[in-house]
Length: 189
Image (cartoon, one colour):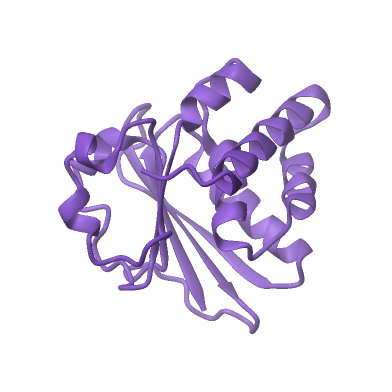
């Protein structure tokens, strides 16, 4: 089983990202489960969502405490919460930022991870460019697709089309593809 924990703030589409990720995985024939977690239900409050991926039926229903991948939609949470708690020694990290790990002050927290398992991507900048809104959720899903390769961009496009319609879906797919391409060009932290 592969487990993902997504950190962000209310209004960034953290829960929608988890839902779209699980739908994309269903399109690949995998078993997937999206679990939202809400603390305070106010705009801007820290929010987590979890996704489990398996080739077998998933019976767990609790939050992910030992993720294989952590996606950080809001880098201000890096010093506010222990977002890397329980991360697998071979885990992956995807951070929505154009800054380096040194600039973020977190290089020591991630030094144990294998090379190529940490990726930084200016997701909000890409979202503003393609969507005209600072919502990096689909952008980061495109990056996730490139990093882990557990589902195709075609399946992600289908999931986005299930969540959004018309031009909004098209723009989100374009933004996700742009992120996928940037990660494949090997943009690291």
